[in-house]
Length: 463
Image 1 (cartoon, one colour):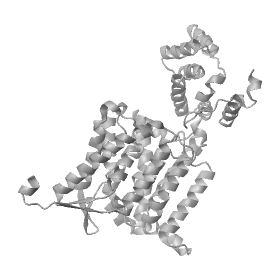
Image 2 (image 1 turned 90 degrees about the horizontal axis):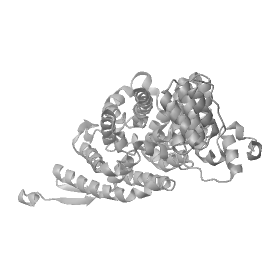
Image 3 (image 1 turned 30 degrees about the vertical axis):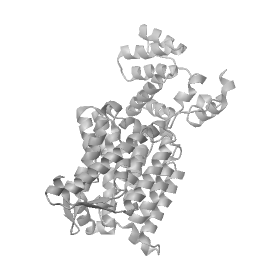
Image 4 (image 1 turned 90 degrees about the vertical axis):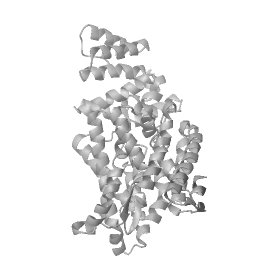
């Protein structure tokens, strides 16, 4: 009615853009695959429908505020899916999910600059609100209001999830030329992680050279063609910077005692603000040679985008066969970190305590006893150490009872034991989803493969 009184002629049109529907299909299929191994994802689907209805309505409102024509398409889908791959608010705070969405669309509608002779939005509309809310949650210490940590961990649940991400994003890599950014980001992160391992004997990201949530960000979150550099050289720099910022933030957040899963969310708006400068620098000096497509073209490989995506495919196969990415990284299993702790790596010892705490809470008496031993070696509070031993003892794990007595008599040569057979599914799980196997022979075989050498002789040997 207000539009009628003001003489405005409001109208709408259907505008289908390939980047929108292609990303919608890629992200939607990946979410379906994730949900097959995490029922909570399917439980969230009806809420995503509600988010979509809100997003379409809010987007229409913003478009009519700025003009008289509403362009209807699939644009809200990739924005919504991207947000829900990284952050959900818990039920009692779920209204904030709609504020995140509103902020993303508002930034797209109102925060612009001149670029390539046209007015364009500056920020990626999904990563901008994720970054803003990540900063607020960190500063206010309210991460517990979200499922952010659980999402980052459960993304690893589906088997072959790295391969799934690679396959569903490959069409966009080819069509939109964003493979250059992904190649640069993945190469930088892997090179740093491999170097860190060579220097310290432990893994920087603990259970992977490149965590799956970071890997997902390198494919779906920072590769928006509209808010990234235009030049191939600029996209190489953009990818290197994204990986570098993510690594630096992971270290800073860990040092500050904040959740590290925010590392891949915080850098993107900063990089979005840098794209014009990156493009300007990219075609000068040594940077002008950072163009994979030109190098591949010199080898007779064309067209350029297909050749670059082919290079990324070869690199992915190489990373997979060398366990640079995939399901079998040794860092996801506790024995690797126990050995690194024995070798004197204090960071590894702290991580061992974290993992043992989780396993103890899941019902492993063995882990409760080992937690007490680890905390004692780290100079932990004797009251907490005793509580861990007492919990193991209450669960009928004899070494826990003996260690509780030794602590009382001020002894420090604590005893260990092997995990009971009925706890193997807890302690050998690693970072993947729950183990559903119940055959004891198979569990012993898995334990042996994952570093539990005491179980390599089979179940009969332990009797």
